Image (tube, rainbow, N blue to C red; front, side, top):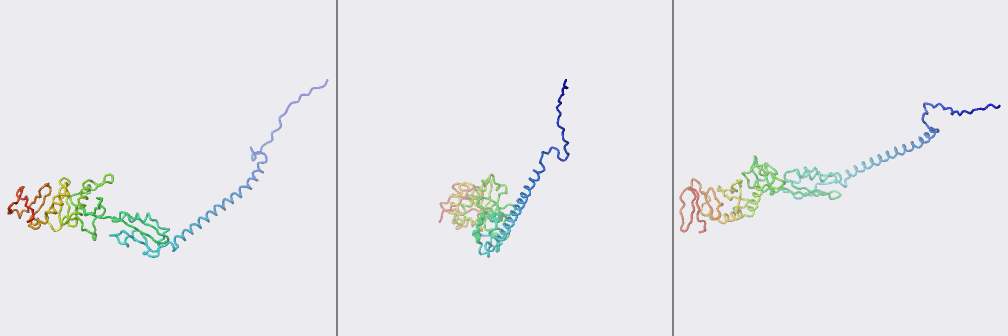
Length: 318
């Protein structure tokens, strides 16, 4: 009887894995060596590219510097700088403010910076700088036009928009009417608009500019502003106060201009301390205390007295 044999399946023996090659697929070392041969050329190409870009950038910087200092784009003489619109600033002051002059490069020049430096000056309201290639400049200024002086803690210039822009300094022009009775708060702007009271003052100045002598603006020494009662004028060389108020200013100025020669001819101006034009149909004179005497009346003369010092003389020409 044959002996039966029983085959027992056995698992293949596991090879011991080295600690250095754990979890590495077969032939991994060879593939890594082939990959290393491809990395080095890339690094070399990248290094060469960076060096090339650096060289190009350095070359451009040197070229730009050479262009900045190239005499073709540099101002050779101050005659190449045309300055227009100046009335109070001199060309030398403009060049000093903008730091412009011979050897200034038009490539290095920043027009916005020069314009901002000029606008920072109190007399300048607008500046425009234009480059004319290759080596010329045109600079146009718009200066502020003062219309009066305002008495605050010190005298300030004001322009037509009612802006206080500069205190009066020695050597500045001062042949302007002086506005009194206002404070700095009256010139505070709300959303950029001029205050109502300051706007009224500007309208009065416009009327006086067009008025005939002696009420022309150049003859007015002071404009006193009372926020409640209105305007009172004082003329150069005349000690008489002229009360206008706020209403009907054009009519009052014309009426006073018509009777002014009669007042001067009959000697009323020397004896009158105040002329009141607040009445719509009459012109009231307030005599000085020293001249408070009865004035002889002519035939046909109509007078109105309000108190001992107020008289309404006949101002019809002889």
